[in-house]
Image 1 (cartoon, one colour):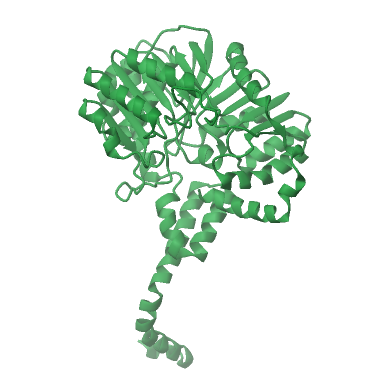
Image 2 (cartoon, rainbow, N blue to C red):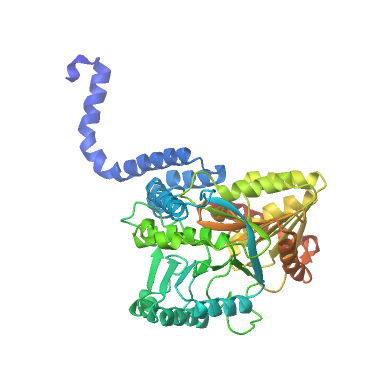
Length: 481
């Protein structure tokens, strides 16, 4: 066949074909890595990722494919198509089951729901939350549904586990859903007493999901507990001694939850059962009897619940945060343990600060994640220069999450102001618009403010050139996490 080519080209192709057998074994692995890297970049383009996230992953898979390609398939997924398809099907079944179970209601269930007539109690510290959680477990008559990112093997986790096992032995339906990564060190043996007593305990997405066509990167960060479909606890506290316990602890994280009653509880229960059906490999249709009950009005709180995650179209929680910031007229207060915003949120805050609005960011001086602390300083400096007020708490680790807008709206829940919470994790958020609720949350923030120090009070040498180099490196790594 080569005789039909011109002489020089024919000789070149002849040499190429002769060299190919020795070339392929030596370079096939590199070639395969390069091809997979290109496929990964194409997938990320389809996922419409943040530029910083895409740049970081593209650099890693192209320059170091031996490390980057397998790492991406393990932890790099954002909107898993397989997960989206399966989880969305489960969601639609759950929404349909809820609508069919309550045919007398005019409003259909959606992923974002607003309800009047709720009652809210603030659980302002770890002892209050733990005491309330244990009391509600003990008082439950029919069903207990608990979802948490971390279940510790310490005194707090053991106490809750034992109470759940006791209620299961009494014939109460007990379902415990923990995240496989957040509760990585909580082995199956720790959960066995619940299962032996007749309850159920499952994990959400294995840490090594080799057979599930999804990614270990996708974590369930929600914290929801529902009792008899009449009461619910929602917030940012995990069931672990750093977050809650029987006695006051000076080293415990500053965090809170809320105890809810009213119509909103049924939707929180539906969100739990949707996640449960996915993790336990069952159908939401099995829970029609639980969907049938929606508690009646019992207070004056108007609440909206937002479920956000990689299984939904768009980024619902991020959309609402952007809207709240851009529509603010006077002031925005943000309390968060980690502050690594995306570019849109970051620029929106800067614009508002330049416009003379009061932008206040409250953070721990030192969080439990050093990389996040280093990466945040780039954003804090620019916000400070634009006129924003940055406050750091020098004592305890702040783990609570609150956004207060113009004294007219508040957002709480499980989401941090970082890329993982806003775009990757399964999260839960509550929007409050009732003045009495906002006053409760503002009071919690005011208590923290008493001990905070201003960002500009820290010596500038702390943010010298060496520090800034490490910040840029941290900002490059953060989108990978």
